[in-house]
Length: 242
Length: 318
Image (cartoon, rainbow over all chains, first blue to last red; front, side, top):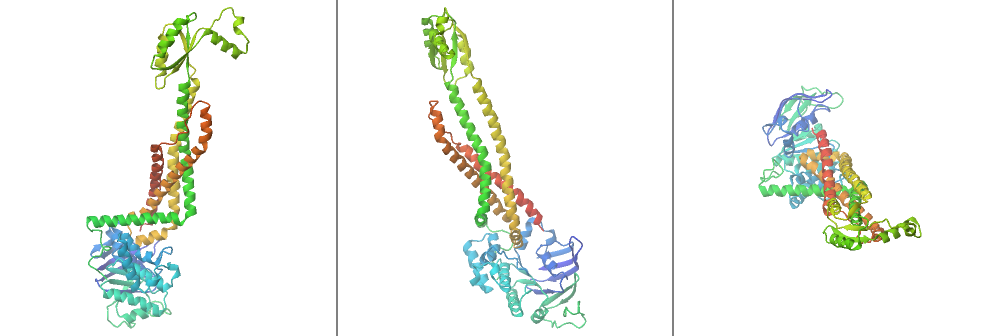
């Protein structure tokens, strides 16, 4: 479904976010991407949704090189990818309902169907009673769930989440992760960038470990991911980082 | 979660009517969204409408002034008479025959003969003399025919034909002030055209600038829309509609302003025309002029917003 082949990304100004990344994700997989801040997790996700273009190498989505996609094709690629941001990226002057409905409005669906699907999505994330509120009236966890509803409303085959549990307490984090697990069970390919090691460990899914723009470990699903012995922490004092 | 029918994923490959319906729904969304933008900031919108209305009312008012002046000129031209001086010593029966002949011409509306005695009486009245005739041994004045031309004929042809008549000595036309009026109308007409061009560009700039501020306020929204897969056309459309509304409503307001001004001027103008034995009121702008003002203003609003949105979208493109 998603392949990176020797991908490098250097931002204007010289910041080398990714230096040489190669991996492959099959359809229906749920993969965690972890590593310390600045390791390149966000950049990696941005390259898939073409929020950034790679400086070198190829990013393949569904067998197509997204780096070579014509500009006018980009919106259609993005409609096949649901993206969830740590800062939610919700429109604060639009109601929860309209925020979630946005991808369907863009697709030009009939209003009755938009209403039905938005209600279903909000119900799924437990926010049906908040549809008339504005995002700033909601808690961080609720806003994140609105973001999830918006990402999945278009039924994309792939969902990307950048630190979806960033500022949430453990109970809320587990709840959010639970949405992603259910999404994955329904056949959606899910990539989650996170440094919530405790949570990742408990879920026993495949984990890609990034460090300084390279993949230094690729732990398969269902393996015990208790901190591997041979891997020294990247930054002592900040806890184990695989 | 992943249904067989998934309209959002993939390209829009739905059948013809379904695609058309989706297209019209997207347009309806953009249209409502653009109206919402105007309604959400009523004060800012009103000020923009006001600026546009005043800018457009100026050339429209000038145009209306011009058409009214031109019509007045035509009316005065018709009232103006030619003075046909006959050879001195022409007898009354000959004059009468000439008068009846000239009256039959289609170019001539009326012929009013002035006898030498009448002419002398008028002259002495104008000069302030009690009896000019008494000072002169003989009345030196010839017969004069005051000829009123019929409207719609060439004045020059009539003049030539009058000169060819037997007994006609000379024809005096005092048309200089009318020629001046025509020349002034010509200058005014150029001015109207120039102002129309300048203010059409002004409309594009004013609306472009308003849209630019609107885009800056909504740059976050634009980015989010792009993130969830909105095409540049979809992002651009609400702004284009907003530009179109600004132009159309500005044009309509300009029309209302000019109409209000005409209504206010109508009464004094009628009083003025009555002194010229005319009863017509002021001319209002014609339908095609209004269509040009409102439609042109809408078009230039569209152009202004198109330029600004296109430039902005290129800047935020990844």
